[in-house]
Length: 243
Image (cartoon, rainbow, N blue to C red; front, side):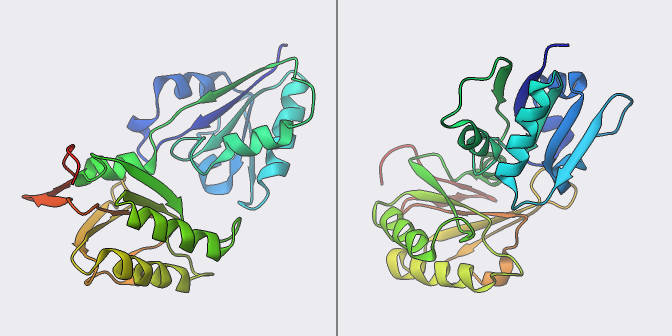
């Protein structure tokens, strides 16, 4: 049996948003590797082995997937959203760095990111230049996060924030909001999109003056508009022309 390895994005939550390409890879796989809640989205079936693991062992997970594929297994490493956006694709290539190219095929299968699903649900808040920033300081220092926040705000980017607030670091998002108020002023629109594309989806748009840290959790994507972002009825959008 010839092995292969695919790193696949499962999209933001709804099964309907998993791409046909990813569905096909999942149907052919012998092994699914990934963070516990993402692997839980895959239905068990005969001939398929599930390998859930903790979210802080990404390199170990990547190495295990490579080893299985080298023995002839058909392995899919699953991420939510897109595997190249704060997810497992970069961990896989880090595990490969400095080693000979594997004899088996490796594919990165894109998915719909939580950021883009949230933007679509809200309207078009990322309609002009934007950036994405992961607010978790697990893998980078807070000083770097703060610098990027300030520079992106000064450049007037719309911004999408991943991992805004967790139980283990509830203070980080409050600090981020303080920085954004200082750089952008109180009237900038900020949107909170929780559990996008699932039955629990909840959307809220307020001004920075009204934003509170407890509006976000780890299932929330936060989108800050640029200086031209405005409302159109119940939607929020950023015009395609420069502010």
